[in-house]
Image 1 (tube, rainbow, N blue to C red):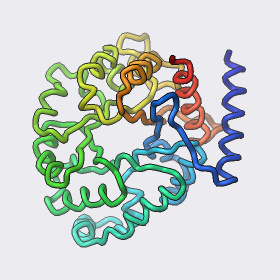
Image 2: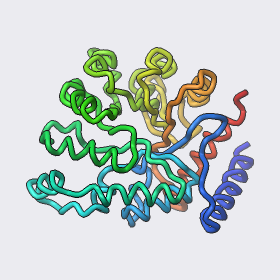
Image 3: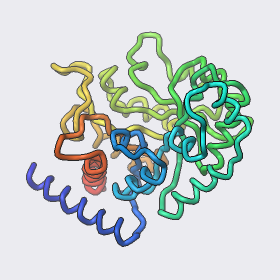
Image 4: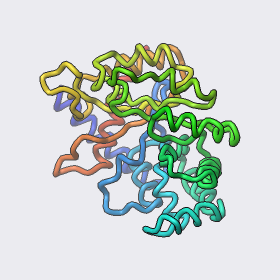
Length: 298
């Protein structure tokens, strides 16, 4: 079985390379479920320019992404270092380069469904938050992803309403805390949504993610797909290569497929990349793993 998977993965890498060289547009929608990637997955590669990240996505065979904001800000000319200079730049910069970024990705067949920015940091001024939402709209994203907290929900809900975009909250281990509540956070605004990290959720709680997905599916914009060991495992809450952990990814995909929910499923590569590999090759393996599961669902 292991050698069979390696053979399939090798052939997938070969075919995706052919597609990249010949200019064919990628497609990572399998059996009605959209598989994507957060561009954080490519963080270890030396070239972090926006065109280089775009090449990585295309080589991975993926057509829909969560884009990290720092890459597009660098592309648009954000100054380095000085916080005051960055704040001044953000409140005065034209959206032309952000629109150009959208076109650059669109021309290669990539949809930017979510822009990840640090707007959950309460030090951002109102003017900077307006900038972030303008940038989100300019790149064609449906919402801004940021870290989950109730303080951020209270602060950002009016901006989401003002700009008619979503604020999409990502969790780490917070659901494992006794006083944590998704519902309490989401009640602060109708445009507040979840980017449910199913690996972190399962690793922190030991609870099957389908319980919260079933209950809150209409408030879940996307999930982060990763494989972790369970809270009760001998080595609990540890990130593993896909298929090596305990996270019930097949069950999750089956539920989303069965109910036809329009939930983006974005791979987040966080396990250690082997010395003889690289992040693009590993993302391709993750895509293939998800594809194999989805193609078996009837």
